[in-house]
Image (spheres, rainbow, N blue to C red):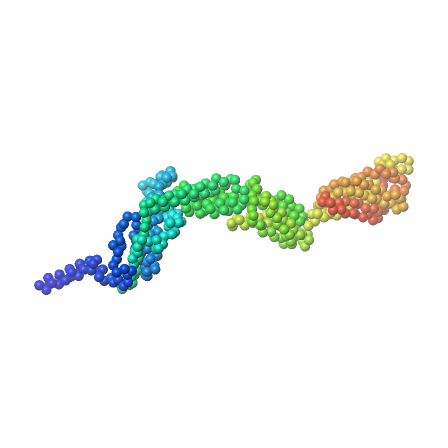
Length: 432
């Protein structure tokens, strides 16, 4: 008899431990918003979303409940979006259908979360709410927040339409960028295009994602192909343009311009070219003198350097040897036509022009050769050959009588700078 009673008590204990009603008695409601839980709690009603959120306190439980409302609405949108593209239908194979829909739902949730209605979900718009603060069987205190939120089929359809409209807008944005890649004229367009396509790429899960990725690759390739191409490099001023291949591109961004010795005066944007002016007066003669130009376009560095020679505009000449006079035509005691050869040396590479020469013999009429205008290029030796039509008395102008003369050589640079080289006791030779 004792064994039977013991067995019965054991069975009662086991059954009680698995009985929800019995377990429920171990939970204690500490606080609640109403005396009795409303009939809609944990139920289902047409045109309403009913959820419960839990948390360590009422505020947390309320927020979790509101998040569940948003999740339910977004999931409803995701489940009703039609897969319209060929790519999407091809992806719906037996092996990956589950993963595809999982990705698609996640993506649509991200997109539809931007819809104004979803953003506007708040407790003030709920039809009803009910909360409880409960001491659980393990003695912990937990809050439960129930929300009844209006969400009709009409509202769902409207949200789906809004989503599809937004989706079409994204497609139009994608097409506008990718179709214009070959027509881009500014670097800002390239950078903005990369940013916009990067954002769009995250919004797509179909073929459009690959289209966005390809567009990013093309635009980044263009960015890396930008070159600083010189147009003109004269001492004190540089003119260059930015090119991608043979195409000029513009930018509003100013370059970083540096030099070890030159002072940068101005950097002027001419839209399709740039002009940099600098002062080189503090620079010494150095083959490494240069102006460095550098841009940083979203981490892509574009640079070039323009070397300059501080003597590039300088002109300075001297006579290297004797001045030689040769009689070409003569009559008795007079040379009527004479050839004059002068060996001139230029110290610099700058082109120069011999304009006029005056040769003076002591006590005699000077020989003036005007309007010569002979050009010479580069540093080093140059032979100046002139013809004198002025009659010269043989004995008086002979080197045997006077081998030293004076005078001047008047010359100028191609930029207009005028200089004069003075002759003092210059040795001459004559063939008479």
